[in-house]
Amino acid sequence: MKKAAENASTVDQASADSEKQEQIALLVRELSTEPDDWASFPLLLALTNTPEYNRLKLCEELTELTEVLLKYNNKVEAYKPDESKIVEEMGDVILRWFVLVFQMDVEDEIAARVEGKCKKLFKHFVDGKYKGGL
Ligand SMILES: [Mg+2]
Image 1: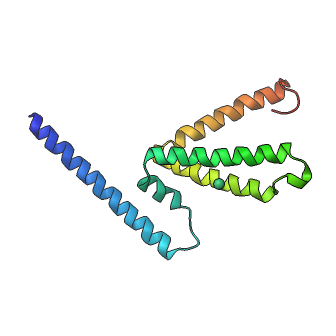
Image 2: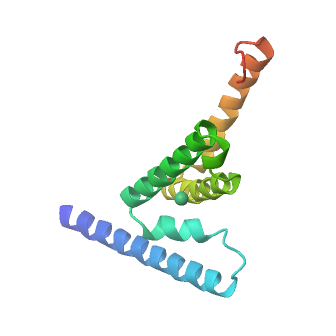
Image 3: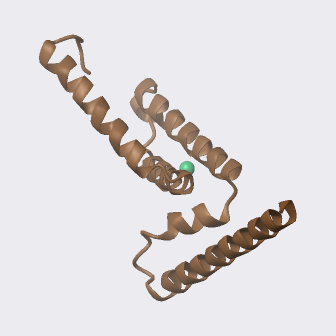
């Protein structure tokens, strides 16, 4: 009985691997033939990169965004980075953000969190709880 369960598990894994490879091949074909439609590229990276790699790449881009925002705020005009550098790093973060969200399959949880946070912050806004921003 245990052997049968192991065989079924192996078959399930092989089937999942095969589906994943088909999905990757389909995405590569789509991206190769639709050079202006990059919306599915984060999904390709979610399917092909390890979770550890994707977490580290998001951390790397968040660090780069943090650095440029700090320098933009803290440096005098002559040494301040261009606003375009902020846009560049925000774009990098968004790309890596979507890769990790797709890989973790947490789109609905993230949307629920954002909605809940907005409701909470709106209450603070209405109540005038903070000074200087929210
Ligand atoms: Mg970057």
